[in-house]
Length: 333
Image 1 (cartoon, rainbow, N blue to C red):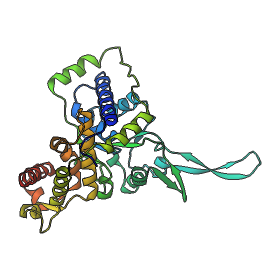
Image 2 (image 1 turned 90 degrees about the vertical axis):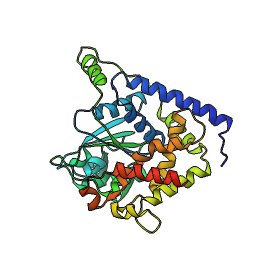
Image 3 (image 1 turned 60 degrees about the horizontal axis):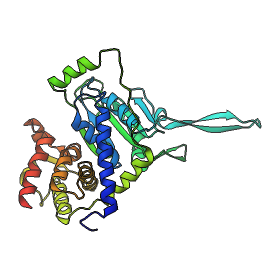
Image 4 (image 1 turned 45 degrees about the vertical axis):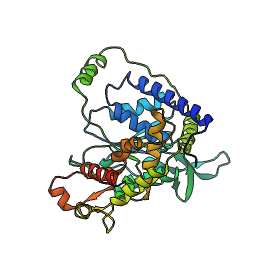
């Protein structure tokens, strides 16, 4: 692949950046602050990934995802995950119905997963069995019910929210499902200025109407464009070294062996490259730079590391481990 985008792709990247800027501006009508969260959600969408948002209740996570669907003119469905939710409540089920000819046949009734953007709200409040119902949908963009496969509409994204696992009534997501999410996005409290805007602009009688700025077809075009963005060889080398350093073994620094039980797999390499490509395009660049990789590294890696008891007992977080890894790998390149 050339290290330089062709002229047609340069124009398309400019169009993608302009669309991104308009979407962010439109989102600001209802979401005050959280610009970094909005950027990461849009990176997931244009990179064909899924996003997992974590934060305490009341931080507008649901409103953020719903507003994104409106600005992108996409079908939206919300699934409230509860302890009694069943897999068929997500995927759909076969129902026995009588035909006009008097025969009885099974008819498939689609579940809420058949949408462009699926908000899995408080995904860690249901059991692992029900959480797993999303695995096939997220990876294959299809679901299998009673031996029959049903294709999901495209584009398709799962944007899930979860509460901190220390809260009551939560179930940690299985590692296999965590790995399906491109980004782990922490949603923090707004700044004082943003919180003042929330108080002033969301408690009156007027409710802003969001405009649909982009179509599903155009999103799919942009997704193909993102994959054509050039990446220099030294970026590929850096990303592979970074991910391999997360895995305990002879090739990793000694401190990694004491702090990490197991590290990230090859999917992390893919998402780091795709995330960097998308970040590059959304910021008006025509090739991937090191700062594009650094901008997405923490969101890609933190939920893919299993820390040791020693790390947890010392209060060391996955984010701190990732930042230390980046510093060491950057210094060695």
